[in-house]
Length: 195
Image (cartoon, one colour):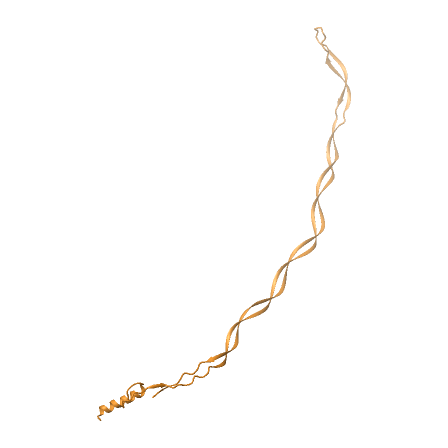
């Protein structure tokens, strides 16, 4: 056998050992067979995992509230009241302190039926002689005046009062929870052998 043939035979032997279905150096064909392994029954196992779940949570919170509260107070109220007032007012009055006097008065005589000239006639007449003087006196005058009057009465007012109150708030919170589940294990794959 020459060196060339020896190298080809060695190469064919090495290729046939690793590649199934190839012709070996001795002319035999290799084949791969799968062994018939009995399928095992499916088995289960418990696996514990951590999951995030929403859990209802209640919290107590203190809240401040403003509230209007009615408060009754006694207060003094001053108001103006109309009243009638009589006052004496000084007045200047003119007084006539005159008197009667007898005086002679000349008058014209009436014309008669005859056409003659009238003659003057003198007679005595009682005449008032005035004497006016000013006198200071008082006079009563009635008028309306507004007078302040103080009264006591009860008044209801509203005041702001701050109150603290506790309330319960309900909500949800994400909490890590450990969950144990039953998992089915897959059967093992059959072994493959080559001849």
